[in-house]
Length: 185
Image (cartoon, rainbow, N blue to C red; front, side, top):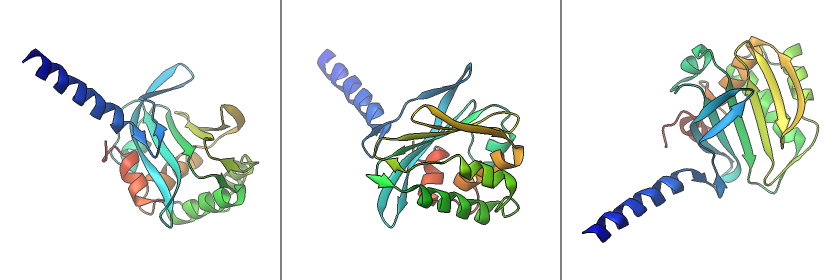
């Protein structure tokens, strides 16, 4: 009986570990922004024409299940993109962000804030690269590539617009949105 209990516990632990791996990427349960430790809200795979591009993870201070809840949540948030495709050109990412703004927050599309944000992305992305979009509680937006700060700006509208790209009515990828909202975990 004791062996059976041990076996069941090991199987449950193995299942839990597998739930935090996606597209070959280990997903951390927590992330730190400044002095705040955020918890994984959810994650999913961004696909384009059935090709996996990156694993997107959303970290928050408290659980959110919609864009509205994410916007209302007063704490910082982190969107992490871990690239699984061999090479993604900078222009493709810029086009995807621009399309996301146009589809979800048209008032930001082409705005000064959006142009400044897009200008922070200055190189291509390769398999294994991590891009962090840190969203502060007062509209601070910081972009990091493999831990290196590419730049920061402050715009509550831009911060909401970035969340809307992933969680809005017309997300970049519906399955990614559902995953980031924790519907698949």
